[in-house]
Image (tube, rainbow, N blue to C red):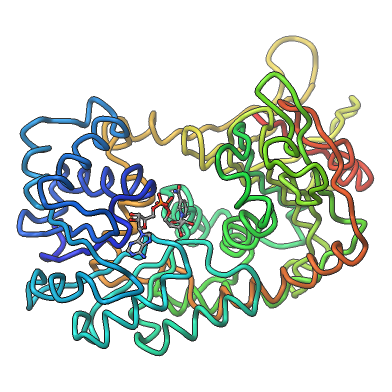
Length: 478
Ligand code: NAD
């Protein structure tokens, strides 16, 4: 179903994120018929370009970052025809009048801030003071949303001076993944899972976001941030919230976000014993973390694992284990709900542990898998084995699956439709920082030194111990 005609201004339209994700995503929405042909996309950035120059830059980006089978030369031309460009100075006067003249009245206006956070305030101020954005306009802001609670509050305050919360879309692309929304469909659309979704039946939960890449060219930036700020405070906590939250009364932005907020507020602080931080050593894929960031004394972590407690009635006693890191064994994001063992075995052969696991894969191959215990086929008596009941979206949905939009394109269409459900609310972001800050302050005050780990491994050995000592095991990173 096409969305209504819109003007989308992308501040930072010539930048890396716009070229890799935002513009190719918009192209796919046009090719798919969701973006109306009257829509317009206006690149606004510092480079001195005209419309044609911008179209050329976007054409190159499409051919570089778009899957070949999705490219159709006629559709590419139609898409490029919807593009315009203005040179603006986010902190000065240049370009703002031109932008104002370009905007079509009487349609949805969205402004995507794909620029450094230090420009959020100045852009918001100019959009409002110069009468470019009205009270219906929407703004989309990228991560990182703050470096700590104080800076996140300052960012929220600078946006709130000019826009109300209903206009602000804080993007976390993890929430735009098909499987993440399916997590809610599975929990709240079936009778099967929700009755078991609590500490009485769930032994523990694992959330893993593993990357094979190192810090790459972002070394200097990354070293000031680290895995806790870059991944846990936003993406992993958001996933945790969707698993742990109470059923909202409706699938409605505030109903869902109220429940997520309660989860963040129920998180206990992490005890030092429940936390492992690491840095990769030099190896086959490249130099060590310390060399990559050019700081031999860095104490920043590019791997982190922790055991978390959600202190409420539903989850008391069920730990959540989170881990994320770079240069690990495989690129994978997975949530695993590990159920308790059956309370009593009626079979007289020793059987070991057999717990059902619901695993939700965000990448690669989005899908879900439920392991169930069955009898091993053959004459060997009643021996139990675990087999997967697998639901790969690609297989189950056939052609429909290849049309699953990428997170960015889905989220941008949600902005145009005015649906904030999959975007973080200001108080959620602040609550997440309020939980993160003391944990970081604690390890900094202790001068904690990250443990080294091999490239291509599952992280430092201490991370394995985090589960071993509880009589559990991490799932394989694959
Ligand atoms: P980039 O450096 O590639 O691009 C920055 C853009 O901002 C350029 O278009 C530049 O012209 C514009 N710009 C800079 N100063 C300006 C000014 N004074 N006035 C007007 N325009 C100005 O950055 P990027 O990688 O595209 O990232 C943009 C934002 O998105 C950052 O906040 C970044 O943290 C965030 N982000 C990026 C990625 C990614 O994969 N690149 C992922 C997540 C979040």
